[in-house]
Length: 165
Length: 367
Image (cartoon, rainbow over all chains, first blue to last red; front, side, top):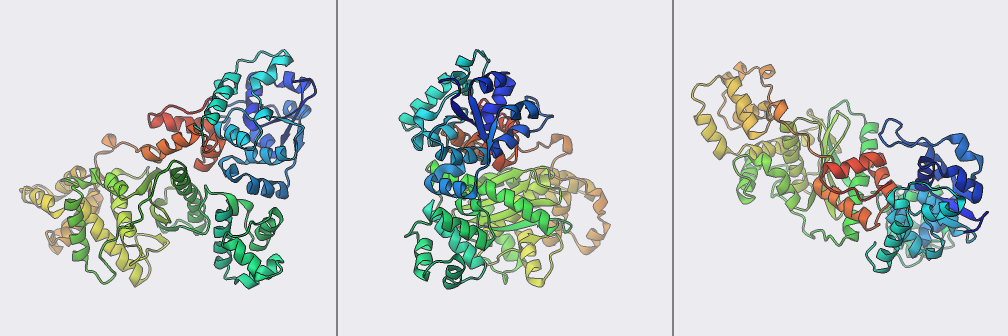
């Protein structure tokens, strides 16, 4: 993946990038974009819960391009992707936006349903893990399993074998 | 998706009392046949037409596209305190509808086949209380509920294909019976005392088994309004009491009372039957074993038992083992996303992980 590549991130990836402190490195290397819903979700959560990750609003917004998703994009996506209701609002909005963005890679690797639906939409070549994303940036985050290439490749195999859905 | 939208568009139109011709005009279709074809699933709706329907019918997009939500379907009967406001019930019904719809949707994806049969009791509003009690006594035998039916009643309800969910509801809501095409459900406020929970299970079972003949009120309180509603509730109460305290077993206990002080006997016997001492008192009265004079000597304030002593009562796990297991499979197979599951259950992702641990299941994600 080359420097300056456009990459669309979902909420899970944003939070993990902050938790593992690689956010600065990936936003310096790529053109990172998301949608309003994922931006909102990344900033919400129960601060009192163990494991809560504080996402700094200023640092998040600094180099992030945030897209507003229109009603027509959402309606079109719901009609072309009947399984879209298996996703949460942020994931659904990101996918609706990604439909019209063949120029962008999508990092939404941490969830089986999201990966399954992305594959079903024919986006197999556009999905990448946070591990792969962070490699050329020089950052060496210690990632949770769902953010690794190994996990993504396992889900890819499960999808090919028809074990998902 | 086409079928879901068709069905929901028709349901929304009918709820507003619009004819196809009237909605056709509002949607700007050139003729009624276009709408008829969409509603019959013979023609796809375009994104622009769908948004127009959203606007005209005053609904959100998800009403038409979200299969993890009940829309235009499902009948609830809430058992609530009279102080529970319609807004509170409505908001909680929205949530509960999502849980039930999720159970149904994941069941479809996982190949669970709901029974085509709908069991029903041969009772009507004209049935006597004695008949309601006799039917309950028969079920105790038929379902082999044993000497303490409260321990078996949940399993018996589940065998009917009914989903039982223990939920964290506002304190003014005890529970609900819910009829949804393909899925019946009983919701129980898990923070209620044990005796009350068992009584609610038996009471809601009555409603599910008599819904067509005696549709219950949307919200029923301990003091129902209207003669008809009152009659149905009294029948349900008689049924529930007989189901939980069968005469055959109760008689042996009553005969062995041997002069024991009445309050002490009611409390300890209620504890053994896992019911409330007050429910036991009324059961004895209805059986004619407590006379009016006996009744006047009973002080309700001394009937403190609500199932077993508090320190022996166990809080049921949130939702139910079968519900959480189906959800677990759904996440493992990518049938819904983790964030979506958390959103539907109104839990944080961490609390969702705790839910799986509580039901002794692995956490199917590492986020």
